[in-house]
Image 1 (cartoon, rainbow, N blue to C red):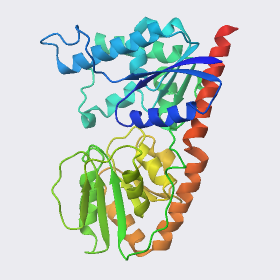
Image 2: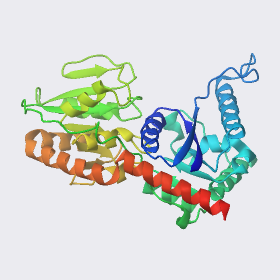
Image 3: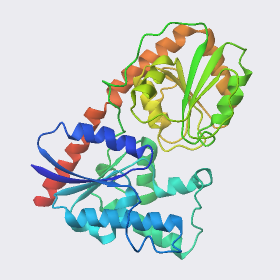
Length: 360
């Protein structure tokens, strides 16, 4: 039996990945799984000293959580769902073989930093040191399982990771939960948007395109944490939870999913839309190009291009057969690429291989 410690960062998006992966892992009777959720909160006295900045406090909590999990567990191989907790482990990460998954590399994140409210390091000794640490961390992994081909290319080009140790394993969804549902054509296109940060995810672009549609041609459903004023034809949801029956039902009632995001590492919401049998209009950023097949399951646009979004929505509103056909193709693509159980099994194959190689 292979003993695996799963060190799982719990930020939104990664939390959904953790839930789906855990369900798949628990189906395997030959794994002894130790789960270590990294929440970046806690009661550590050092992190909670007065005057410690909030950001540093979270980092310290995360560091203590990761190092405690690794020190306490007796395992054959460790799995990290992002490189951040692996970096926080510092030298402890090397006490056993480790496998990393990631939706984005540090360099890719820095390139999008202004959209995430993150300040990238300026060129200099500190930036050089962090780059050396990240290179050593990524090259030291037994395997790296990026979510997309976009991230795979950065691992090879920016960090010199050997292609033979990289396998693109995207996150999946539970295809038994996320399923299409029959829906009547009520004469208006039901558009769904799901994104915690409405504006980074392109909500302003979508609203501009929606407002240009003929009155009554469509209705817009926004799932977001961002406060926004109500308006005619726009329905807003602030309290939806990942994988909840209410969220799934909302996907099932929609005709098209739109994510014109300005910055995106991957976009699990687009996979959920695919599994729900929705045509997709999304920007060609990050891993979304792996999710949407242009002209087959939906359309790819450039960030802030409300004219293109409007054109695609107009076409879909006028042709219900088109969005139905694209939605069916999206479901087939989800079954082939984004099955959470199948992708969890692939992760476990790599973990077993890493553990076996270290014992030779």
